[in-house]
Length: 105
Image (tube, rainbow, N blue to C red):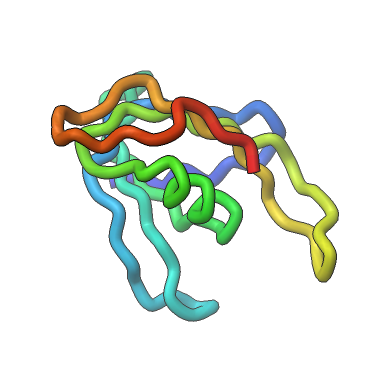
């Protein structure tokens, strides 16, 4: 398994969500996204910054969904800079979940 760690604005990953789970990390509990990358066919994982976790939660993303995640760079927040992401739902798993089709938070 490889890690997707975007460095530059425009870095993108798309594929099928395999899992979303909480793990204890260096900075406390964090969401880890596991995705089957459309481009490489590899299973990738990424530790989700709070902004990305918030968008994935609002969009009700779950296993089986196909998503596209684009890193948009750093933004200035009220207390500190944060990583900004745009997320699109490419297709939904057939389990009845429906919410937003695209979100920018």
